[in-house]
Length: 507
Image (cartoon, rainbow, N blue to C red; front, side):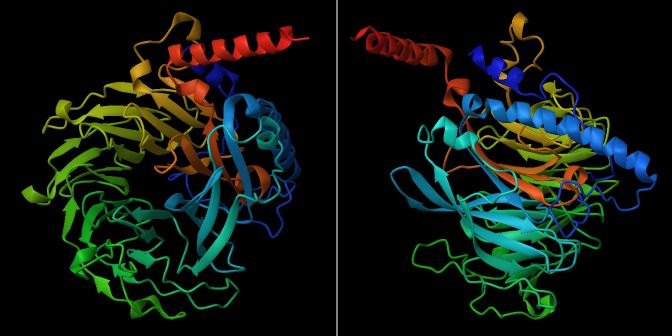
């Protein structure tokens, strides 16, 4: 419908430039947080220049705040529901867990988050309970009246796991979403049963929680590239050692507890703490070499546990097949014009793969168009970000819809089916873009579609560059008038108009 471009244009950052932090190699790591959350704290590690730089920073901050204020005024129009949750510490990853309870007006669901601290307290993996308000329940004034410095009543911490090192990436096991994997600044991948792990108090000097399982095989740090398979309990990782590593959790156990009668525990005993070397370990099924630089992200095929892809700082997109050996099946040498940060394989169509890059673009590839000699032309280049793209993900609900988040503070929602339907009067909006979430004031490092509640998204930003510390978690759902078929929406609006006219004509 035509109102989709209007929604994108209404976003305060849709037509103007945004303030973005200076690009870094990875573009992910937030700076440590000052002890307070005061926006006046503009400390940056390694910065110099005194008052002149600080003055310039404040001028930029005003620009960010003005755009944010403009966006906030549009919240009742653009959103069906929005919850804003202020974080004490930055979070690099956010994921939906299992749905726990369904009620009349809202559902309760697990939410997995990380807390990246400055060392004054331990880094943690947080298991929260989130109340997700059902569509067309929240009143407009309710969703627009939130305090940026407050915690949302919809998000409540349920359990804390003291993590050995920073939590860079969280992924849940599709066969049992109580089992999660985490990446930290080490070569290992850590597996946790979040239900059986004891709740810990994150105080200075507290011993680390003990992982239920440790996956070994990397020769250098594996920081961000992490994926779980939808068809088998397989785990995939990439790292600084330029390799892609594949494990099966079933190599350690005979059952992951997928049956309802099972508790879902991987390891039946968990300690209150202790060194992670006490945890059982499992080696890889395979180690795959083909990248010439750090592997930044990995993804499984939606239909095969043996097929997967990876992207890296060498600007390559590589497709692998474990059945044919450890060498690349297809290697696209120049998938982007800069480092690739993220990749996602379409769960509805196993031919379509999305990539996001430091060149500010998202590209859509059809693997049938990729050849073994490294040639590959994307179906389309989506150009709507003004800074490095950090995360891409297909919608679990509609096969042509996907989201992308970036260092420009925007989370864009695209529909590649709309590219060919672009109208002349919507020329100001990038082709395929039909919604921009502009509620974050700094780089959006991660987001996740809610498979249990279509069109509901959780997103998290690292606000260290603009506020001196902390982060922002937002859970939101755009108005269904934006994405539903035009005829359907017009019919509903006509009924509403008739109802209003009838009410107005009554004495």
